[in-house]
Image (cartoon, rainbow, N blue to C red; front, side, top):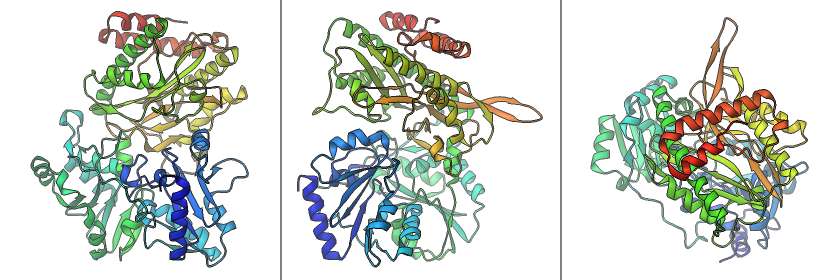
Length: 594
């Protein structure tokens, strides 16, 4: 079964044998991770679509992939010949997955899915919206497991301690903070399955998931004990002693469900968005739905952490200046440069910087039409050379011991058109307007989105993705709970507080032509406090020149020009001491006032 069409046929045969009318394949694992170990990439195996999100539905006469606008162009290419229809989630007239199921399945039909890959919240949505229609839900077995004969093994790399110089709260203090937030007593306990939360609480890191320094585990927190469920082969003697010193017991990763089924404590507190149905379905007591306290706590970086992040941004910014100086020189000499070369060179320059660990996501280097796909990724089988005229969009990031980076810049190549200049300038205006924002403490983050989008809306422009996502501290490059996206206004716990780090990345994409996105990371810092209001503002953390040769200066107002010049002055002052030669020359030229 080498083709998606063959795999879907085999799945349908299995569904028929089991009496299942519809089967959902989610992009998830038992930890509801965004980036998945190969072992859990069921949707990729079945469909051939490699995007980081997306859900496949298979019935006896239909197969569809629901995915948002970031991946429409990529999905349309990768699904070609698979027999899977692209369902453009969010587009007018396209039903949601549950709407489609409600309309297409008859009463008494059976819907199945793997409960280990579905959040408790999503499972409840299925029950609430489908069982009332007479649709039955079967989660007893994983139909794909026996079909996926060449499935990878679970990762098994050792875990390690985050250097204590980079944090100011030890594991015992963080465990106490979580307990205090939950007010744990003898009748309750808390299960954490989200990998970044576990890594943050314990000040441990791992290599089980590409780009994210986390490890596969579950963490059970009681009033008087803590149990870490993990592959014990990953825990060496040093880590075992460390955990014991913080009152953390260890148990085998696979023993979680048996442990939960044996519990007689009456109250289990879980985050329904961050724990899988399969992990808790055997629990006999009551389940109380909360937000993981660790999710909120880790989003608010301490002053100590922010000080390391600022130093990390200097290291990353210096590496980027060296890269862009190399690119400019190599291109002017007529050297062959491909989208793959860009990824290799970014890795080369970053790996020389202090504290560097790994990329924080797969580099997006898209020239012209490829840049119009927000999550494009060049491969050995499909990539473009950088030649001729147009826009080169580069979105990249890295993991450092002192923080996580994520930055997007657009490089004009050759001669750019008036329309490209217009698109670029309006995206820059959007970026600057958000960077200058001031807002009350506790303000819902989705509502900030209109500040960035207003200049684009006035110009008749728009983009499909959110403007900002939270970013971890030597953790996941996508972190919540805050998100700058007006379509997320119904989400809970999106309030903005001091110390949060968020991306600022508006864009414009013209399919088949080019894409523009300008991205910096920003931190919430105090602005003012009066008898009326206490406000926050954004400190731009990312340090790298923003290209100005393709800016229509006449479209920028005085405040926008002043912001850009001050930003470039800061970039030059903080990066100059890290650079020399052609990289320093490039920095000085690219940070001149406009």
